[in-house]
Image (cartoon, rainbow, N blue to C red; front, top):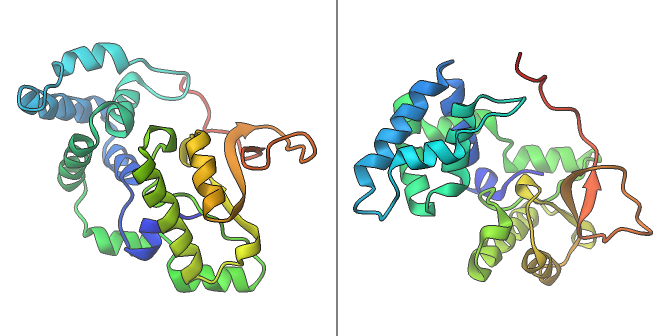
Length: 219
């Protein structure tokens, strides 16, 4: 289930930029301080709260990740306005990674020919959005863009139209998402809910799935 932008345009997805920023150092606190500084530098022009307000609200750790890592992810994935998230993420990516984006995309992501080859030997290739966005947060126009571009990517690799499938990025969706998928002839979609699917009882456009466990909890 590749995201279409990485296949069609060889772009690093913003979620992956965040992971690469975090992987560039063991010091998540340092990255979060950079993020706090970036927010405070534009807070008046962008009508934002002081960065410390966001930190106190969203820097809450879990069994799996420390509070600074979760603060960075929450702010750059969801909590800041989209254009600000994109700009800050791009700046942090340039600062913490020293590589050409297109070259890195060619290393990280499968390309069209590789997907066609996988499909030719029996692998199923489904859709995973265009830019890997949280689908329930999108407008109708943005939802259409995510789904239509996903369909375009599947068309370019000649994925069979009679069993088009979609895996929701982050497991996130709403009724508008499902309606748009049906409009574009997707037949089945998967959430991030972990359980065995029962095709006689569950909605085929919001099926659960099974996948390997997460990394072990922090000690």
